[in-house]
Length: 89
Image (tube, rainbow, N blue to C red; front, side, top):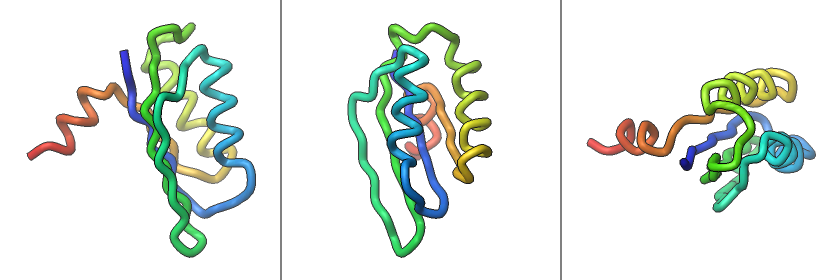
């Protein structure tokens, strides 16, 4: 099962390292990454394979939000099908 992670907020050092380490600790694998910095704003989208994750997606998603709060970012993780449905009109 694949999920989409979005990370947005004020740019600072170590964002990619913290997020990718978090995912690796959960048993998830980052398949694709797109990130950009606009001025001092950071934006990243990751396609994440959750097939070998050690926890349910809903649990990891909640922990992503908590991680975001700790590092001053907005982090959302959702099932790929839900993400696609929300962005197709």
